[in-house]
Amino acid sequence: MNKILHLILFVLILSSCNNSKVDELNKRVLELEKENSLMNDSINFFKEITKPSLIEKYETNLSKEDSAKIDIVYIDEDNSYFKTYDDSQYSSNEITYDILYIKPFEENKSSAYAYISKQTRQTLSCASCEGKNETIKVELSDFYEPDNIIFTTLKECNKIKLDYRIYKTFKYGCCLEENVIEYYDYYNNLIIRSNLDIISHHIPNSKIGFHVGYTVEGKKDDKNFYNGTLTIAYDSNERYIIKTFTTIEQYLYNTQLEVLSIDKSDNSIKETQLDSWSINGIKQKEELNNIKVVLKISDTTVLEVPIIKGKPYGKNNRLHKVELK
Image (cartoon, rainbow, N blue to C red; front, side, top):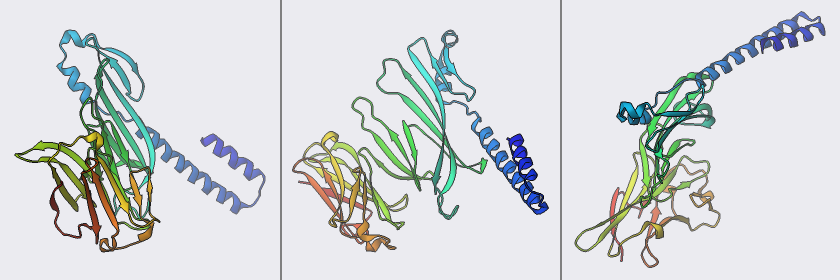
């Protein structure tokens, strides 16, 4: 890289006798060398090795005889590997990187900023297993200061997605287990948990918006089923809980969740986000109206929750219990 820069400088000097131009070119070369140094720092950061925990725990429990039978099928310089064991188990350690333009902390940057995302995924399963145990560790660092790790999390899940102001985890249910989807802020505070896809209500040019999710409980008391919990959450501090009870048992496969607007200018994106252009740029939650959350438990059992002045039913109550007929 340095040889190329100096060659460019030499050619430009030959074509110009102006000393001020030469000084200017020298200054630019120094700037480019500095940028190249920053990039080298980023590359070195990429080679950092993390210690496996999920897999080490499994291998520690193996007998000495079994441990000798571990077959390392693949390993590379970045400590990604795939191993097999004599009991048909296998494990892997996979490290991936990405560049993201996000805004994890309000007070940190005035707008979206470039970050390096490092994800270390550890998997433990067997050849005939339907599901697999996975942990994912995420490290987020400043693109221009790669040694400055500003955020770390470790979750037992199958996928982590880093978004603009929040991150999302997905744990897929095996056999008859439900999926578990969770949204967190970058302080690792839980915002919402759901077995159904979480629906986000987004208002363009506004910081106001909420998420809606539903967890299925399926518990029964003397006369009613406690079906589950409907959650409407603005953030980790402002959550509204609606517990639903019916006389019929609920099944997740026919449960549906929607967020609807009475204004035709509002539209849904991929069924998991409602964009409310009709209230573009609002500053206060009290301006949020004409939205309703719809939970369909069966063809005849439907719960509609109107959002009035930014709150379910227009009430300050954080907990509601609703019996459905």
